[in-house]
Image (spheres, rainbow, N blue to C red):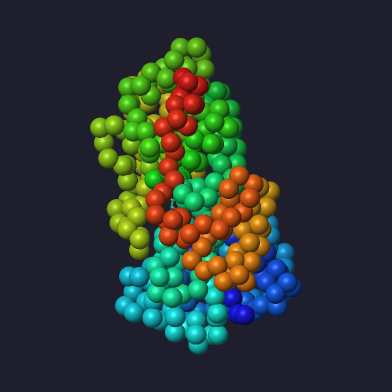
Length: 341
Ligand code: F6P
């Protein structure tokens, strides 16, 4: 069997570990061959691919990003997109496709499976917002990067008796802010799922100042005040209709400075959270996903996505995986709110 592989959407550490595991098991255990498609769905759409022999995946386990490149190409928005993809796969002799991505990339995979494409999904995103899996790889690395940033920001905030706002990614889910804020000991955590009352945030910060302490706030890029909409840095949307988020951190820093009379500074971590080597947790999870994805192809379990449930890797229906976003439940935020201020 010839198996195609693609990595779509935002890149994240661990993608190369999936590719490595799938190729190594597929070649050595099942005698399969592999075709790597370039830049997400653009590759199958344009027939842009490379051969993936065992030698091509040597030494990539700890490398961030993706050796195949990625994009936010949406073939469902291209004229005859699905037909072109199926024609290109046939022309290249590709019998099945392993698709690594988040809700957008896997949403396309689910739609194409409905049109007959033999596909297995692998959940990828630093946002950890895919419903059918306990964790996605990339998330632990992003949380580790943000936690280290919060530790470092606290030392400068204490030296200058300031409020420091750290804006993190996560789009419409606050998982990175919640976990990094907890691990980094943030004095306030703000997430998209819980619109915040600015006066209450000021109160927490002033309580810190009154005790002669600095204030470090961890704010998700999608967080918004109760009275306003999401704070956007720039206009425009991507091929899946997502707006470019960002700006809430600066907005909040300015208001804290105005309200408290004390200096405030904002740091936006941005794509730092997506770069560099994967953590050990993400290397293990990504490797397991790759091994089980190639088993699913071998078993003909198309239209499924490998997923983590507890410590087990299971197969979830792809349609279920992309149906709803996994956002932070109210109880998980209530649990940590007692630590604020
Ligand atoms: O979905 C992952 C993610 O990093 C989000 O957290 C973030 O909002 C978005 O991608 C950024 O997208 P881009 O890399 O296209 O700017």
